[in-house]
Length: 491
Ligand SMILES: [Zn+2]
Ligand SMILES: [Zn+2]
Image (cartoon, helix red, strand yellow):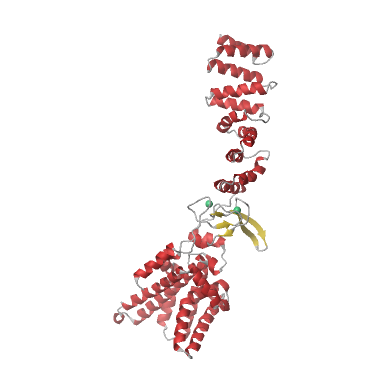
């Protein structure tokens, strides 16, 4: 096939591919791993809420939408994975990982040394097919590392490989049967079988059933559902096959010792088998939702590129993510409903209270915001949020609800002084004198007011008046002698 057609196919697979690129609703640059069909949110692996529950088979992880608390669906890993057409070189290098490299070298050596021993040839073939099948399954599960070789790998699940042989035998048998009637029909069937073979193998892994794998009503629609990328995968498989063929064509057969030649041929063809099965496994995973192949998301996440396990998120982090999504989508009402139980708690988190107050303002509920401002002010003071509390204070003076605690106003006015915001401090102390006429802190507040008026406000007359008021109203108070002294200093 010409280079031009390959380029067109790659282009159509990349740009016209039905593989959707779904982004996280909150992080636009990240692919979505889950979709919430309840509220239409797509979530990256960081945004999704993971909850562990005790199931029949041990601990179970379930995934929820932090915005609406509904269970979410996997978005399809094709949305998360690097498409196979961007991994050509990685697929090519796959058999050169340590384990498959040693295995192919040993098997090829055996095949080269005992070329006429049928038992050895059969053993080599069985082991290689068993390993290649393991590669397909392991890749299909989401691991890019080649599986290790063990006695179990060779012995276990022999049925799986037998089923594969059964598939080949049934395909070959039916072609042979057709050939006895019509050679043309047999050629046609043969071409069709070869074209569909990768999908048949992928279906075999997916369903574990020979009958289902060989059911054209199943594999033909899936091939069409995958579309152009299936053909592209086929081209890659052909390319991997063509590369060693070209290599052999240039091999100077007459100068190479026969043993080495047999070794190289066996080695290259085994590498090709491993590459092909790895590619099929990858395609199986990338299109798992179209093939109907059930994936283990946890295994995939842990093995794709060897990602480190993420720490489970706290309920508070989930809440914040959910709120951010709701706010981003303009769902202020839902965000307020979500926050309400938290701000009603005895000691609410000041950041959640701040968010609640902001959301009331953003949603146009100014009256409710004004009412809530007093409680929010108390939360801020209790949490020592000096800047936020002093900034909020002018609002609470207009609130129709009962004033905050006297101690909170006193503390806030003191913070204003610390921050050299004397005007606000003055307002705070004046507010105090108006609202807390019987509070034990009142003489101290008056004294601070007098000091501010004299030192910062240049209103010494007013300061004198207040100091005289303190001396007269609180004759036995500890502060009175101090007030007398200060009055003298003011002059
Ligand atoms: Zn949702
Ligand atoms: Zn996200």
